[in-house]
Image 1 (cartoon, rainbow, N blue to C red):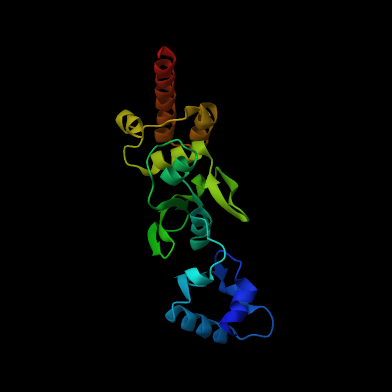
Image 2 (spheres, one colour):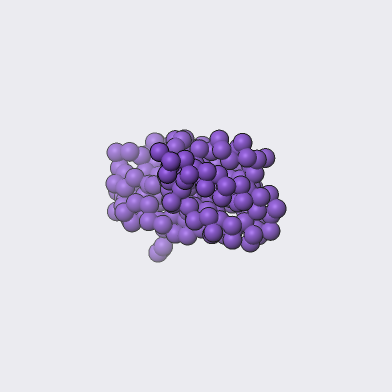
Length: 213
């Protein structure tokens, strides 16, 4: 296979999975050796085993970081600070894409940026949905309420009143407190149920201050 063949087959893909190149009468070993040569020649970058990114001059589509995060670790969904910033619920810029996974906790540094994966038990791996994050690209992202609960669950002392206040939550209308309470109860976590109660109080305080202005 020549590099031009690769561009013809997968040039429009944001991220190239090597399995895409194995259709037809090809030898997997030959494909892998060619991919390694192109990587060494800086024609593409290896994100992880079996996952590649074309170098800038040849890249037609820029991968969305959330879609890339899903591919880099399966199963996973974008959550915590990254999802909260996506919904406009926190003001901070989040330099790394944070996801949760049932696999081990790890950080991946790639040509696309940094990706952090935080482990949760399988009983808590829910509350996400598929969202179109760019033209032709979708990603699994936690619902707003679940993203907040994931962050609280993973943060030591995350249900503390001071910690919740320090999050500087905004755009409360994007958060359904009834769903938050239901999700906290579904989790079976006393910590999350306490946090849901305290967040309701915090939200009411914020609303009262706003209405008093």
